[in-house]
Length: 275
Image (cartoon, rainbow, N blue to C red; front, side):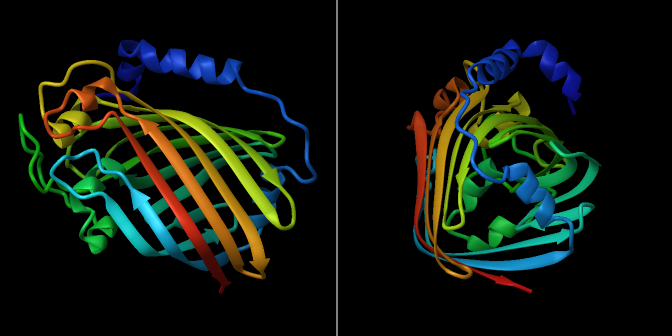
């Protein structure tokens, strides 16, 4: 397994991306309550929320021999134990540092590349398989993997910068993933709009497991995303999500993909229940 500091020394691309995102951060007009304050208020107490979304969900798959992921019903759940521990669907985390503007968490989450191999098996999206990886050419049914690492969120009014560094803890591909994103939130009592841009670095071990080898080029995916929600009534929202992702040149060079970018979209309603 590679050490995370070694990744930074060998991959200047990610450092350049980090600098560009931070330097190009736009400043928008300030709205009423900041997102950081909202999050702080939410996690002051223990709560459990069930969410059900119905509509049209589509997620492109980069694999030429696998179908795109299409769903009409999406269950979700969120559990927070004060500011100590949380579960958001299959992502779990524990807070190790917290102040008015900064959150540092130890987290575990799915590596989404594995979901592409199981897009027609919805139950598989919630499992982790601890088997060893294939070599040279990816398996037709490559296993799902689970990542563990550190996430840091820094809030600047309505702006949020998030950094995450993760490694495989499921004994599947033994690779690493690093993420950096910037988000701006517009929010009032009825309407929420979030604009986000970011980049993801995926190590050679991760890419070669899911996309074969040899691969040529860089290891960084870039994405932009918009999330909008309008409150219809208490607990019922009209939701629109759209994401565009530019694949790294190494993924594009793989023999198992015929795409250069991916799009995902959801349009529908979301209903939440506080328990």
